[in-house]
Image (cartoon, rainbow, N blue to C red; front, side, top):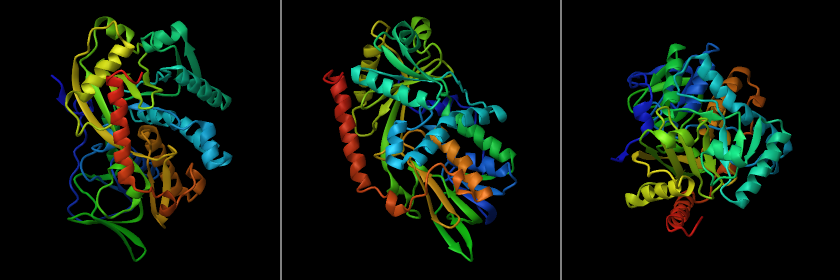
Length: 428
């Protein structure tokens, strides 16, 4: 029976229990948000002896960090040359290099602290679903290989072997990438941070953030945390009216469905090398297997306000498209989350005031981008060197998205029409 429940909550090792903030506290750095960015920053600061307090409004990983696909990808959705066009060659190349190294940062962190993240570093596939997609794969390969990235193009029998389907004839294999259990990873980061002396408080949503006598104060409904520096690491799950960073992106939903554990021919054929994958469709489909051999399918779009059978029909169609000769999958879990989106697929880094830092709008690349930005913020705080940040700081006015709510609605309408077209087999 299909359950509306996030698979990762069930399969991840248990998160550490953290108390609610009930009395005033002080730190050198206060971090708002207990996801990838916030906990990575906390770890890298604590390693250097910095006193850190983390305030999480709900529970560790309850936002996007615990609901993601779990793909550990390099780069952004934008091609490297497109980043150069948007940012200029110097900043574009700097960002491409930093994000190219981000998967290694994630896997090294997991190895260094022995985090049980159910991680694999087998690479990920960008699967071309049609002729236009094959052209995109070729362009990405040329641009990435020109920069020395460890990528290759798979075609013919080798492509079919990796993907487990003859419906895909060309794919870009990025050897730098991999997969993990996102909730297990974020729970592991929290355990590491606590072991390094970081104070983490859950169920402690920030109600206001203000500066007085040269110090920042983050106030919950029960207490305050005073700190020299504050990192806002709430991204797409920013709540309340105490910050305007929500104006720097618009929200896009992401839906996932997981099968029962694969057995027999399906287990032998589908993504046999434990790579993650996504295709080149306008509304992409993502594919991966979890630690227990379930197949996870995902796509952009919201579960809410649709018939219960809508995405089940979509998932069955995807199976029929890629694995037509296999028995119908038995779906076990479905869930959805949201991420911050920008039209150029580039995240934003802001320093709205002295001692206040934030990064937001990771465009669905939160595991690597968040982990990297947490370290970058820690390096910047410790050294004062702005070169620690791989993007130039923007002002909020420069980042503001016009009518973000309307953009979210229109995006969702477009995605619904696209998926309906797939289900009706109008869109191939």
